[in-house]
Length: 545
Image 1 (cartoon, helix red, strand yellow):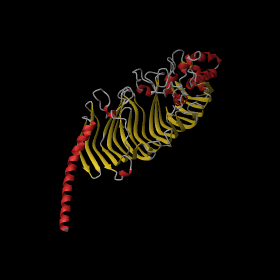
Image 2 (cartoon, rainbow, N blue to C red; image 1 turned 135 degrees about the vertical axis):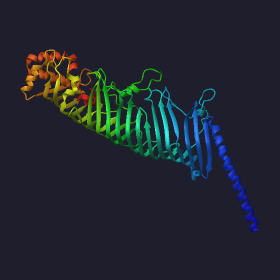
Image 3 (cartoon, rainbow, N blue to C red; image 1 turned 45 degrees about the vertical axis):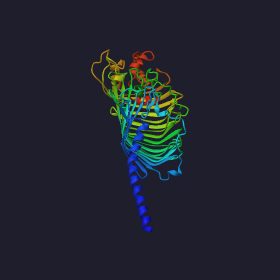
Image 4 (cartoon, helix red, strand yellow; image 1 turned 90 degrees about the vertical axis):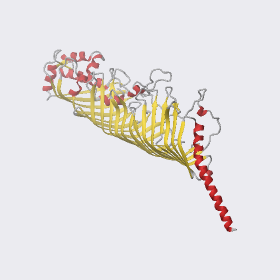
């Protein structure tokens, strides 16, 4: 009897095993056909294999208009064996190997859904299903290995409208829908290619997808921003590290942002106004009109720093740049534009709010340029522009700034250095800054034309003054004016004070000559008041003047 029971049991197990093998083998084909039929003819799957608690899908591809928009070499799903205790569907992990996604923003600013299907009436069939209750699901871990994303924004001009994300590796755990109020661990890295942004990025930390609270450490290597074909990159950095945290989406606090060997390229147009590089890539308006200028353009109202309702704000507790380089190109003083090159730039600043606020930010800046040094230190409020700082320039070779001060016909300056000390004070948008400038070891080419003038003053008188003062001219001055006055410029004011002070030292007989070269109010100043232009480049960014 026992032998008969054992025999029957073995036979049942054998039949069950055969059926299981047959079902498993054919279920893969049935599932593959079901997936392709339900999603559409634009989806292909090479093969599907089933295992205990898992599904392995190979060779997935989605096409749209004859172009592959989504694909993956392999999609691996593993079941959560305790999923029956949870509401909805439950997976322990979802792994995508070598996935590819094509993302596009159309000319109307809408994100194009790469998985959408059009019905005969032209409507999106993807959303044609009813408005029934959404099914809940949970995912223990999402993994992407060697992924790629091709992103294009059709509102912006090519090639600045495209970024390719390559070698994307991501691990994100504890995902659920509806989104739960809990932290997910994030670990992501990628390589970015494109003229808009390029470099290597990675981040690691915690992310709450419901509250958008974060605690992340980020790092970038070999970063390049806005690489224009005609001028090259606007900004670069050998490396960048930051730490960011927030309790919600209202404010993100960056405790530290450190840039090593950064590079910045700045330009002024023929009218002396700062050229905002973002204007060149601003999106076209929805109605196809002119490109929309970013709100942060140079012409924006300085007080327009309040955040929009519901928008996130940022606070950088400490920003630091080491061993940087700055190139400033001025189209107003010469064509091609005059270049001021600064090296060994060291910069620190604290409490930087975005949008800007009236909170005082302490800063320090130092650099070498034209054989000399530029140092500035103090505090400034980035919105009101209230500032209390000092600017110190030592041993600046003034022959490298001839376009700023040398007029046609003037005797050429062949040698000379400048020292400058300026107490930079701005209160209620009024500048009241005393300073001292010292010119040393000036020498001039022979001849000179126009009676042999230097900045509109008699060359012989200037040379005699230098000889009688140990080849040194020291002048004290005070710069006063409103930064809201379009005709006011700190550097122009310094040059005006220099010219008038020099004329006064030469005697009343030449004051008229000095006044003549200055012109009535602004015209002459526009010609001779550019001598400290390079020095004022950083201050112009700070003060908007």
